[in-house]
Amino acid sequence: MSNTPKPALPLEARAAALRFPASFRFGAATSSYQIEGGMDADGKGKSIWDTFTRRPGVISDGSSGDVACDSYHRWPDDIALLREMGLGSYRFSLSWPRIQPGGRGKVNAKGIGYYDRLIDELLRAGIEPFVTLYHWDLPQELQDDGGWYVRETANRFADYAEIAVAALGDRVKSWTTLNEPWTFAWTGHAYGEDAPGFTDGVKGGLTASHHALLAHGLAVPRIRAAAPGADVGIVLDFNVVHPASSAPQDRAAAKRFEGVQNRWYLDAVFKGRYPDDILELCAVDLPDIRPDDNALIAQPLDFLGMNIYRRSVIGTGSELPPLSFTRTNPPGRNSALNWEIWPRCISEALEYVHREYAPGQIFITENGLATPAETPGADGRVFDLERAEYFVDHLEQVSKALDSGVPVKGYFAWTLIDNFEWAYGYASQFGLAYLDRKSLDRRLKYSGEVYGHIARNGR
Ligand code: IFM
Image 1 (tube, rainbow, N blue to C red):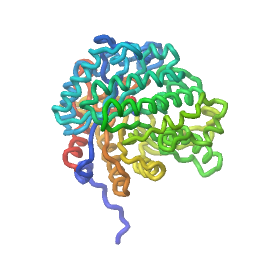
Image 2 (spheres, protein in one colour):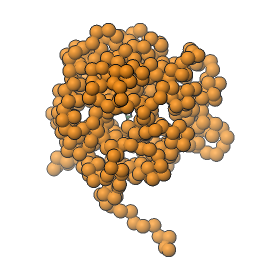
Image 3 (cartoon, rainbow, N blue to C red):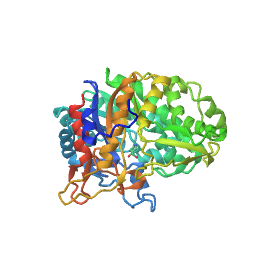
Image 4 (spheres, rainbow, N blue to C red):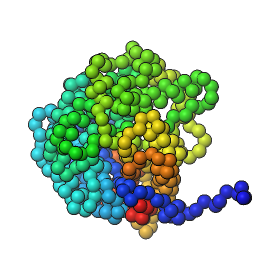
């Protein structure tokens, strides 16, 4: 046998060769603040992102989600894109302040009405709604009372979850409590890069995380009671963590980083306890964790959603003591957000979580590539070859994990349309579809065509 590597197949041939089980769900994902706009339409209350984006200097291009993709008005265009790609599932989030403007008490019927229309039309188009209750847009009034720093917010979230599921659960069969508790807890409360913008280090990150996990735990039984038979899960952002070298200090730093990023959430949700090494290391920064909290958080779940974008290569350093780590950038390709492009992160993450935690069903709920915002060519098309390659490379890894027995049930590309990418505004984009920022028209990019081909023919 020759050792000469086979020439790589052209991208479209690799896309055509991908095969998934007949029941595999292909979809695209978005979130309310990133696409809806309609900032104060029809009685919507303010969220922490409406407030945060008003602060000078926090969003790199000075923008906000006030209009975003205007999906509050143009949602039929979003459904048209899903249909064009032949996707059978759409993952989107509900805006809590659109449904319950003050985060407690009064419900805004017009806000519910918006999601009613969206869901009804999705179902008519044969597209399954996969709904997230919280994707970072906390009602500002709850923030004014302490936000994720206070336990009370967890109770308010459980009430809101019940209201939303009672209104929509006759049609929505897949519910997610939280999207990426690590991100909103740590970037919002430890680093200050996201709303509400606190720079309280480890104490901030752990306190917000614990209350968010309590919110999840309190909401799950309320969701089940409001929509018996629905599938309920949580979405975690998982990082494959590798030490920067084999030196003991780097290995220890990688373990600390991984403990806070992955195990803190996975152990709490699937094993009913926080990891001992992190409890010990961060003892002085811990929030009030009460005796019943662990059991409350570890509710039985129907699925785990995993958002996977990258590998983190970690060495010892000075970031967030006592976690004391630094992120290093191995040579290779990076996205516009400077995230390493390393497709094996998908199969490694899936195999690890399956081995250590064994959730019954796993969905890849986000995966995608940020590029600098694109401009269409003379023919009006966006030829985003790099993004199309990213999806094929990463779907090959999903397929590999399936072959090794991981129960991956579906894949949601991040994201349906170019949208508001938080602190990066609109300068970096992840969309399968291009958004003309003036006309707000949407148009599939080349990556959307390739992904649609896989979704239609790959099962
Ligand atoms: O845009 C975000 C999304 O809101 C949560 N997951 C990561 C994406 C890319 O940064």
